[in-house]
Image (cartoon, rainbow, N blue to C red; front, side, top):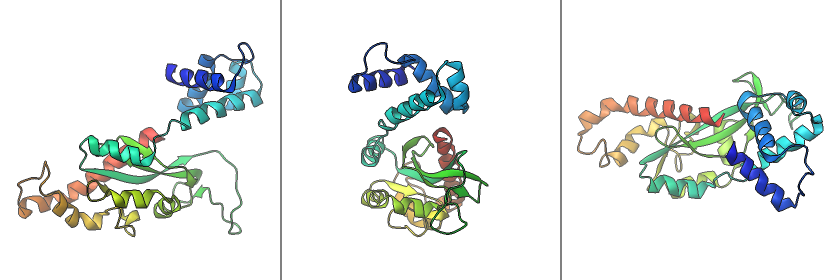
Length: 235
């Protein structure tokens, strides 16, 4: 709460907002923003609880989202931090952030680009890069929920080239949805090649092929489970 409040205070100082010109102080505005993120409280209720207009509540909410989004780490520094932390690999997966938006017309008649047929809800597809234990390291800008994971990463021009550039030192693991991007992302079908790269690294160092082959299913299923866990805090 204090972190968000400090960001809002700095933003007001940057804008030159004079004291006493806002209906809410920085701390109460931070509470409003956090309630919307954590509890999904409706803006109408937030406005009522703070005795402000609905349009003012939206303005305060969007200001809070903007200052938080400005703190988002960039991809290359995030990967550099992962290498400095000693990670042998990172994971990538797409997660759907559900929304309550209305139908949006797309380029194809009768097809809503923000409607996810898999989740049966409107939402945005957000590719997430996580540490081996599932902790989120980086999230991309949102894409329409109808997009496939591969389409989403291809649309962001920096993701695949950066991952391919660091692939010799930091391998990126993904599910079968990324099988067409083998230069940057290793899918389950490439597990044998990944183990070849991993053979001299702990905890597999010194094991024979006969000892390592039975562990391949656990490597793949464990990676997917941890990456899905990493998508949880993102939501």
